[in-house]
Each structure stands twice: as structure tokens, then as C-alpha cells.
Length: 474
Ligand SMILES: Cc1cc2nc3c(=O)[nH]c(=O)nc-3n(C[C@H](O)[C@H](O)[C@H](O)COP(=O)(O)OP(=O)(O)OC[C@H]3O[C@@H](n4cnc5c(N)ncnc54)[C@H](O)[C@@H]3O)c2cc1C
Image 1: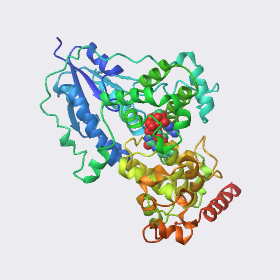
Image 2: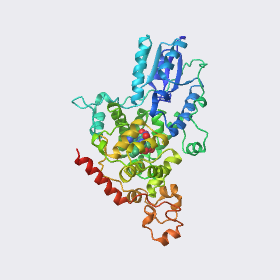
Image 3: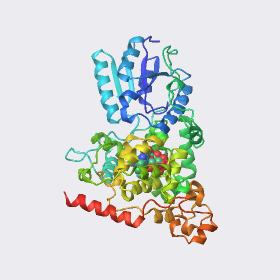
Image 4: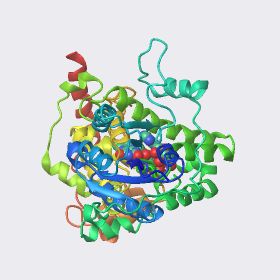
């Protein structure tokens, strides 16, 4: 066997199945699997607290699958990768591509530097169905609207999602690298009771990602189209953190869904994977998306940062029960149902008039699936400033949304137990309840549960007036 190992640099692909970089490294003979926690290059976009917690467990799972031979490091990848090549006389490095602008630029530079040293550096597509440069309009510019993007991707014969690769029969792993760290050395999991709270809700790692997918296929995909809108039903796959960390690839999920057959439920589920693709597509073509409004007229929007309101929104103490339920779900589980994400985001941006970037930053820290592409694209979508966004004037009403999508109040009562005795009629707007009803339910507004930060109708009107100012000044 060769004494010069192929380096397989694991990043957002913490799995053995469908891993083109790993298979390429195995073709060289011995494999040195490597993981680098590169917070220096990540800057603002280093993993948030909840995602770090996930990463801790995901790395432990990968370490176990690799029989403890994963070589773990912390620091700048452009220093560590060449050093590992030197130390192990390795002339081949393989990785699966990432698309966050900081990673993309860093990796391009590393590839160039390695090639200058006659080291073969190859990258592969391991985390998308379609490469962002594969799907372009006839005039060569990128799509800005989801539907034509998705239609083009689905009908482009050259872009059919590749069949997932098999898990290798045997990985000829190099002996343990002596200068590596342990997962614990990375200190990704703070010693805080919040961690245990989050951990109770998840099964982490590649093996579990497969189980979660199978459970979804068996029990939920058949009524996904309806069930996905009701947070109490848990009708979605909950695969997002597994996909984010690459414990499972979108190709595996796509293929498994395709095996089930063809109906509305499956097509809607696939189109959600399509939204994930579109988010990465936008991030690749518009790398300022996490920072800048994609519709620049929103640069003139009169956001108003009320620190106290922002704090109350983060705490799930806005006094609007459906919003508070969502924000508490986020804090307690590291996740929030998609419909509720849209409602809490709309409330922050359109009722409290707080800039979407403050909301995105909180999500970044609290979500186990925090993902630069999906988070930025979704916040811009809700705020109305994205390329294919919900129009700003469409403002979710958190009262009617709660009544419609949590009709029995199961979700809201679970996360806002102070209101659990209130009749459903008043659960989503306790400020409308007669005093006797509040008393019977043990609710003291402004004491046991807050009064609403704003009046829903008046704040809506204020947002529409603010929008007029932006539109008329263009
Ligand atoms: C304000 C806001 C912020 C968001 N931030 C993130 C984020 O940081 N990370 C993230 O993964 N998703 C984000 N989303 C999208 C969506 O809410 C989650 O992907 C979804 O809730 C994950 O749950 P699930 O796996 O059960 O989804 P399912 O309904 O089972 O969907 C399957 C998969 O499709 C993808 N997907 C579904 N909906 C979307 C969408 N709207 N945009 C992009 N991909 C989608 C996810 O990978 C998901 O796992 C955000 C949405 C909003 C409105």
C-alpha cells in the first residue's frame, strides 16, 4: 500500500455514504480523514451556538464511523492542509465543495497554492442537486425567481441529480495522526443546561439521519402537502440540520423520495429541497445576500431598532402568543417549524419594523440547522427585499395564522403554558378576552403574560406607510 495517503477533508459532508471526495481518496490507497474547525476564516459566519452543539455530536458520530482515525484540527485551513501534506508526504487532497462565499474563496486559494506545490487538489459536488452554475437563463444570467429556476433544473437533461454513491466497502485508514485534537478539545459544547434541553430533541449523526429519512418516508410523506403547515402535527421531515451538516446528501433524500412514487405530496416535498437549492444558487450568484438587501430600494427603508422589543422577541415575550410559541420553540429545541418561522420573521420586520438582519443573526445563533444560504434567502423572502420575495405589503397576521394553523392550540399551549387554560377563541389574542375569562384561566395580562408590544392592525398600517415612503422616493 502507498505510504503517501490521500487526504479527505471533511467539511459539510459528515458522512460515508454518497461522498465523492472520500471515494476519490480511497482510490489513492491509504486515506487520512481530516476535519478543521476554521473559525478564523469564517469570521461573522462561524457556527452559532446551537449549530456548534450539533457539530460536536456529528463529529463524534463520524469519528466513530472512522474508527477514531479522524484527524481533527483548529485554525486556518490554508495553513493546516499544506502542513498535513508536508507531514504525511501526501500529494493528493480531496474535498466536497461548499458554497458560502468565505469558504468558496478560501478553497479556491488553497487549491491554487497546493497546485503550485504540485499537489493534486480536487473538489466535488457533495451537497447540492445542481451546481449553481449549471442552471442559467438563456442569456447567461442567473435566475432570480424560484419557479423558472426549478422548472429549468428539472427539465435540464444535463442536470439530472446524480445517483447517490455507495458507502465504501473498506476505507484503508491511515494510522492515527499524532498531532490531532479530540472532538472535546474543540469545545463546541458549552457546559450549560441549555445544551441538555436541545439534545433531548435530536438524534444526531449519519446513521440517525438515515433513520429520520426512513421514518419520514414511512409515516409522513403521504400527507406532507397538508401536514407540513401545522406545527403541532410535526408533519415535516426535520432533516434540515442533517442536510446542513451533510450527514445525508440531498441526492439521497431526492432519490428515496423518488422511489416512493409520484404524487402531489412527493412533488411538494421535492420542491422544498428545490428551495434549498435555490437558496444556495442565490448565495453563489449574489454573495452579498447575507449582508445586503437584494432589492436595493429597501436600503432606504426606515427600520427602527427598539432594543427592548428585539429582546422581548428573542425571549418569546412579545405578548402575541403564536409568535412567542415559535420563539420559545427555537430556544428550547434549536428548531422552529417553517410556517412559524415565517410568522415570527414577519412580525419582527413588519410589525416591529426591526431590520431583518437582527432576526437573521438570532436565528443564526439559535438554530441547529443555521445555514447561511437558507437563512439569508428566507429572511430576505419574508422581509420582501429578496429577488423572489413575498411582497412587503403581504403581512402575516399572527392571530389568524394561529387560528388557522394551530386550530386546537396544541402547539401554542405547549410553548406558552401560561395561557393553556384560555379557550381557543382567545388563545391567539388574549387582549380580546373578557376579564372574567382571563381570571378563570388564571391569566393576568401584563403580569403572568405580557400585553402585546404593538397593536397588530396599527403596526401593520405603520409598516405599509413606511413602504410607501420607500416606493415613492425611488
Ligand atoms: C426566516 C426563516 C429562516 C430560515 N432559516 C433556515 C436555516 O437557517 N436553515 C435551513 O435549513 N432552513 C431555514 N429556513 C427554511 C425552513 O424553515 C427549514 O428548512 C425547515 O423548517 C426545516 O424543517 P424540515 O427539515 O422539517 O423541512 P421539510 O419541510 O421536511 O423540508 C425538507 C428540506 O427542504 C429544505 N427546505 C424546506 N423549506 C425550505 C425553505 N423555505 N428554504 C430552504 N430550504 C428549505 C430543508 O433542507 C428541509 O430539511 C428558514 C425559513 C425562514 C422562513
